[in-house]
Image (cartoon, rainbow, N blue to C red):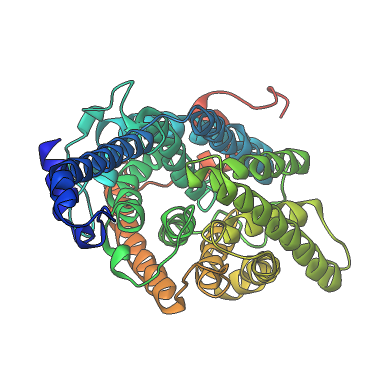
Length: 458
């Protein structure tokens, strides 16, 4: 307290503080000591209040928020719902009936593999301090993460689980690009290596204090680069290296169950509120606005997709509506914490139109077999959304289109290189990575899992 009193008394404001006395002559000398003591008493009281206020503010900053915690637990469950069963059903309905179980199995087992990978080294390498491209091993096996350790206003354990759901869905997205023709063992090896070599470093670059933080005013609220561009580029690389499905594009490979696809897309739409609004890590106004613009952009993308489909082919399809919804959800992801209502409308419309062109005309023109349009929807939608994030920002938020383009470019190159290496390793370890022609004819459900999704008659 003595130091606090001395600091207050000798601070820059000390000269302006005085106790006026209107008694002159010898009388004032009698009150001199009283005046000095009173002055010190006032200064001491002010210092004490300042110290108490500072301590209270520090305590408040580190206090657990039950409201934020409850919301983030729900958000984590919603994001897990996006993969299991949302993405599994969305992809499962789009493949032929002889391969639906293989898609469900890949999504299910990837969820298990990525959960363990995230706990063992992923969280530490992504979230701890390090260089521009990767963190350290300080939190390997979640060292130091206890029941009472906090990440902001929520338990760190909840943050770990929330981000675990992100690493679960990202490699699961990729499997749609090489659906119906890749060995199950190769899928697991590739996605594990890719997660270590691409997902975790890009996470660190974007959110862990890495390279993207050096780009002025770069924005990626919920994973435009980390999740969607990252996965979309990987899908394009692998589908080209693996080769086309037997009979593509002359043989009919129509979706076997459109109802599954629409149900899966609906679950993705619902779960995406946890994905985007949850990325605020708090139950506040920013989370609420992220939810609002997510709904707007998704609705706009659905209408844009079926609108252009209606004009070109004469019929709006359920698969088109579902795919358009995913395109809008992808594109608004990086902008959900910063864009305006008008920006959400533009981002949604742009993603619906551009993704439609890439998933149809450009894919046919270039001849690559991206089975379920992972690149056309996630890669292109992510690029459109990430760039427009720098254009449409709310008042008080700084955006920089050049920085957005730089972050997109780094992600494309990084994911592309890692994907080539990871696939070559998986190919070498599994005798080619691709199923045989007989296995492809019979379907992956029976040949790799010994089961049929609909019984022996299918």
